[in-house]
Image (cartoon, rainbow over all chains, first blue to last red; front, side):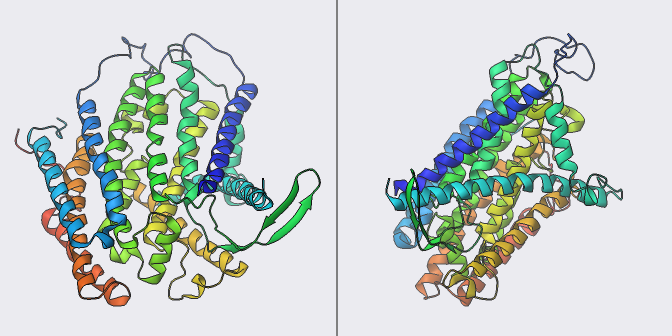
Length: 118
Length: 403
């Protein structure tokens, strides 16, 4: 039923219009008295040191990659969960094997220290 | 356009305006409520001057925010800096579109407007903006977009605190999204459907999922706390070390939009927990509410839904003043080393239990719910008192492994 999606589009349009409206409205209303100090990044009152565009820990990339693997597992589990009763024992055993295989990957990542933050 | 379609669009527009207004006023009320409850818990007064009991405090703050100077840092990426507050506000609001807030309302009209033509609608109207056939999937999809607003805000500010806050937010939200996804698979397994009205209907027929899926409920609520960046998981903000993290550089209405997004998230999160696990708009101990739709039923079920949602909003605030903040390594360990394996095992145990119950013919009704509840009680005991060895419950989460 494609008709059910019309309200979502209308709601999205309404929210976006409101968000833009708020930004524009405050832009018009607010005073503007920029100074050099005001426009510099806030570092607890100290003069800013160095650049912000620096490299950051590789851990964050690792988490992002692990996330993709397990989020895809969620994507597989959702249709299986919905059809669970109809699939019966066969579906359950198949999914148990799938989860077990992924758990091996999870255990490997754990053992190799991908989940440590020290 | 046919008269029926025009009637449908007209009703949708009315629902959209009503839901949006209620959410905006609701956000203001929840901000006021949080400040008053916080004050009460800390034995001080809280805002009580603007309007009766300080109810209009948030309105006054909103007006003040509109009139404040809007500072954009020199080195900031201007476009992303301006877009980010809107990006975190939009998905928070959009999630509410598929949550049914009450029993269907009978709406019948047939009228003709000059120029626009005839508008027709008959039969019950679902009390939600869109009765999508993908329901829960839509919530997951839109919910995962909310990380963009925070990450872009943190990166575009060109501020070290903001960058760290944004990075932490991305890692945290991404990790707990996996846990969130796993923890409602149990709901889908029992309900056999992804649309929220069907999930509510299934809970009316059997038991509320808070009894049938207690462990799933607890873990869903915890990952919901992490997804909304609330204490004890507010590491992207942490006033004391990152100076509110990703929105350090924001001022004026842009700051207020982040604030509104956070509280909208709390409301939608609470409404979602109430819908998935507390029977949504179901009135307990009666099947009167699932019969033929009437106006009275819609109003009463709406009141019950509001009460359940308010309860969870209160729990959000309550937890804020009860638990201390996690450290970041503890947070990631809780997500990846505790919740993920526990949830995977839980899905398998739940599946096996349901199959066994099905084979002996208990597939709905009281014995079925009672059996699942006993299974959950045993699991909760095992997880929190034996496997956990009282580390989580007594707050000693960190344990040096190896090294």
